[in-house]
Image 1 (cartoon, rainbow, N blue to C red):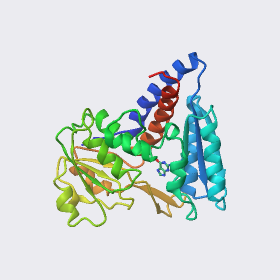
Image 2 (cartoon, rainbow, N blue to C red):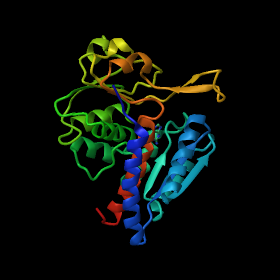
Image 3 (cartoon, rainbow, N blue to C red):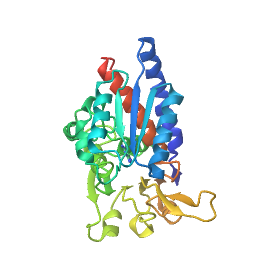
Image 4 (cartoon, rainbow, N blue to C red):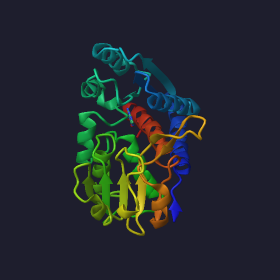
Length: 294
Ligand code: GUN
């Protein structure tokens, strides 16, 4: 059984970013990322902090904007428009989920598609479906695909079951894996909460992508021997023995599933570090596309 180490693959992605950043710097260019968080959800705060930290480590321009939960739709849209017009900013990300009174889809539509490093804007969703590589692909599925490539997992002709149909992971993951070419060409099935007899479906899979958002949902009865399992879940569950009072577990019951697998990603240390690395890569790509350096 191979443990797919996300931190190692993420370090490779970041090294590629460093080379691009140095090239851009020689032309007087520096990629910039603006991250907007509305409200004070602790997990979202932690993600936003680590995005800002990674930008600074790489020498990217980083703007972290933390707004109160009472921020209105109009105030948020005004900030997005400001960043759209700011030549020092190449990528804009509004942390999801925002508070309930915010119309998230409208906020995403307000982001300039050329700065939509999350790949959530309808133009970028369409480009992914059209296999137009000038668009941005959401960071988490892009990171999962890169992990499969790095681990030497053949996707061409493979049966993949993606469990979860979110716009952030499940849907773009399916589109990426069914696209033509390297890291694609898979036969993809998307399962979700209304899928009948999930275990019999996932047991046919060569590759399972678990993106349901429920702790330890995928158990040994879901997995055939020799399968590859990518665990996208990052769930906080109570743990009185930890100083933080919680621990992170994936969507996969790792201890019982791992022995069956050919390869599996751990939580933490699997998909998590990849998401942020791909965000950096998308921000660098946005800067390169804008300045004609691709
Ligand atoms: N919340 C969870 N994952 C993501 C992501 O990739 N981007 C944004 N903006 N919010 C998220």
